[in-house]
Length: 499
Image: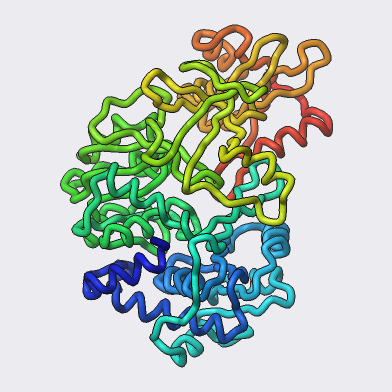
């Protein structure tokens, strides 16, 4: 069942049940359905047809989700974008996506106007756009638009975070949009009585996944305008949130706050925290939730694995494949490898992307014989639990040894003076590559001290020989380190090395 039909079914079953809680406002399934129908009619009146892209550049709001479902109901392709991206990146993404309409709000109108070109600019809360969307929606009918939508039609276009260069457009079809929600419901024990909360931006897959899961379960989705640590626990209590979708970085921020009575006596029973494994025990002990689940996935592949509730964690693993997903580990020749042998992670999944938009060459490289070649390295244990090792291109080959930059980074971050670390391989005329660490500190420390710390915990060949201290690391808007920029800087001539 495609996601717009899921919404119709939930309206038929529980039209008066709250679907959204946001900023003190509750929106029932019935009201949401009517509002998104209006959005679909409004977009069709602007010339949006089946397969056209509609860019959403909005802050967290009810209007964001209403418009998103309006896009899907109109038969168009939903293209969410972070309006806070730099002008060059936004211009590239919009130029590549070529949307029929850009939908934004008053806060982002001018930045989007600078990059939208001749594309129709429709805005909420502003009459200065090409189209004042509030008025157009108010004049549109509430009936469901008579648009035929097939499971194989394009539904969503997401852009990768660009850690390896220019962002790639990742195209999905209706049969896969929101489909992973069924696995979350089964594995996290979610029911229609739950309230799922997410505090990430709605353009992020974490929050969109929470919204889709709530819809699939007939539950309630709660979200704020933006994450603020001081407001988090009051929001949990105000919404009655029972399930939290979040990121490990957000949980780490919450752990830095002063303990409070609200956090000790809260309604949350389970947290799905991407990247939360290193702090799982601290979260369990302090926030009194029943479980913290970890998962592995990507923009391209969707949700791939999840740690089962109640199962003892396995260090370094994000769990076995979710139902319906298969994993293989292969060598460079494509030969399947046995348990615990490191190779490229291949995924067979109904949730994966359909293609890289306007890039048949990259699509052919990534999708072969029904398998998605992730470009990630990892291994499976004897029970099929997946262990991520590194991005394939981030593996450093020094002499005859291959090593994971992730392992070295995690080790360096264990030092109390290190705030962040990024490790890459830099060219070496003898060894092929040498290990270089980029360090952001939170207390004074020298390269010699870090070298000694690493030497006590890593193999000799894994210890960085080159060190550089920086005030900050280059990052994407979703806070992933842009290692390709570090590599580019090295290829243009290395900076003086410290230590």
